[in-house]
Amino acid sequence: PGVAAQGRFALYGADRATLEASPGAPVRGFDQRVELATDASALPADIAARHAWRGAGVQLAVADAAAVDRLVTAQVLIVQEDAAGRVQQATHLQWAGHHDDRFAAAEAENGLGAHTDGAATTFRLFAPGAQAVSVCLYDTAQAPARRRAELARDPATGIWSATEPADLHGRFYTYLVDVAVRGVGLVRNRVTDPYAVGLSADSKRAAVLDLDRPDTRPEGW
Image (cartoon, rainbow, N blue to C red; front, side, top):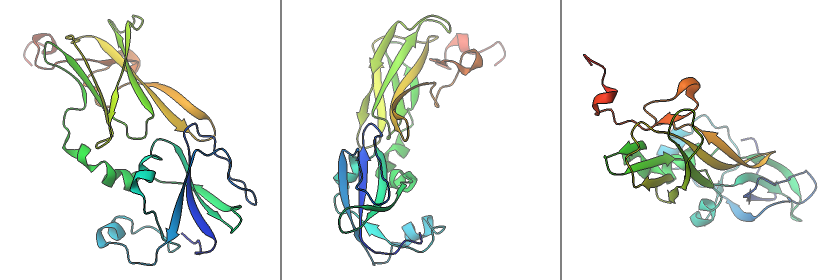
């Protein structure tokens, strides 16, 4: 908003959040560059309505959707440059609108979290911006991790998943999530599951619970 359609525009991405964009100098520390074109056409009505809060300014378009896909897990800047490639101004992206459309298939998924069928336990997490996700498994709320398993990402939904060939009802877990953090680098966060049905004391670990088991139903439940 408020930016004139002058010079040239591009998206820059860095997998390890190493971007440097100083006015008067070329962008440094990038892994990818995606050219943007100015676009004077009217936005589709539904997109204009969803983003009605935006101010007037230059409208940009990218022709290669696959190139944008490769930026989803990186640190990303949108940069206005002069003809020599020197930064005039730059800002970080707000991905929410893109993710709503690109990963809309995730809306139909109702199996997020940890689920066990008595023979195997499946972990599923929606994290389209993560570079890697793994699950740490614990026998109790205080015991050290006994195993770490990598989750695989579904490119259509942004959902990460893994299946352990065991009934883990009553056990505990956390996720390790690798994300690019601007000004810091590639960060590994240990987090609980936002879809968990139970947590240990002080919300330190998520619990694998089958709510249909007798031991999860107090008398009179």
